[in-house]
Length: 385
Image 1 (cartoon, rainbow, N blue to C red):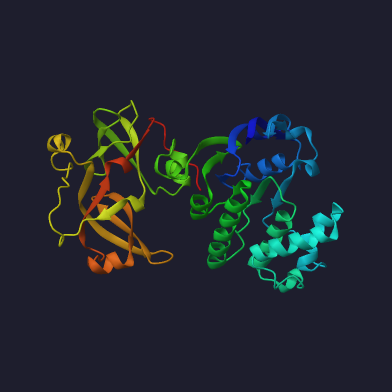
Image 2 (image 1 turned 45 degrees about the horizontal axis):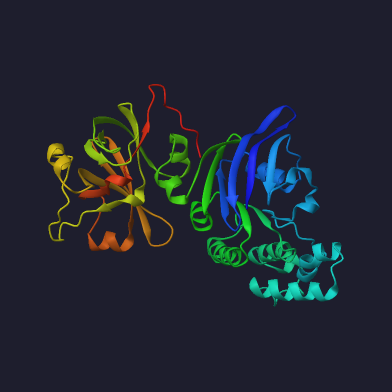
């Protein structure tokens, strides 16, 4: 069984909000939905929940078309971005609101309140009112309110966006643990790429109400199908390139950023391409390390073609900026006669290799991480994130 959407479209006042949305989520899995503000992510969740009638298409779960059912009959839980707690009720009263509305027996209410509160580690907060809770605690109460109803599908609309980084990290790990334990089918909207990678069994990128790409997290981030997806998923290095030679099985030699690189992720027929390389896929070559079998095809493409390695070494770049990031990571900008590359590195690597502004460096990238997309002559626009 699965949650299946078939050609779901939605128009409001003649404006097309969702256009032919189709996907399938196996029971017990998580589909993360990524997209710009206004892309239709929240409206899609509201259509699945029945809060907005879908004007066309089907929403199927367990062989039943949910679009023919009322929201109450769909067995769907919805966790909103703003928590939507009743301020005059305690945490316990908020959690039990749905069960009381269903006139569930008191013993059942107490049993599920105790169980879910313990799971979410809020059993010591049940007598407090929402104003007495932190943002993370309020979000746990909102999640508990859904979980006591034992939904078969759980919809979450940017549930952690208002929290600080530490609270988000703790709560996302807890939600993933609970989701796996109870095998809840989940649609999860977020702007956070780390959340998307951690939570999602599949990721769906949407833009202007249309599905652009769906696939496992690694595929979405490493092999985007368009320049828009590459930009939106923070590929950062999206460079114009030109294929010099097509090799076997999707391999090609690509001239990009002053170097000739081997790509094993190049299914493009045209010569002009966009070359996508994520900053975390680079590494710095340590000059103090013993010589390795990795060869540089930027110097000798003929030798590289016959070599058994699939790694590239890029030379001639100098460090122009070192920008601190969250955690123990820095973003390093490299320049070579106007060509620019962005590379992630750890603080430890920077210290160990004495990487400083002005240092000339060599960097390495595996051929599988050199991803090519077709480039049209007028392809100069990339929708901002």
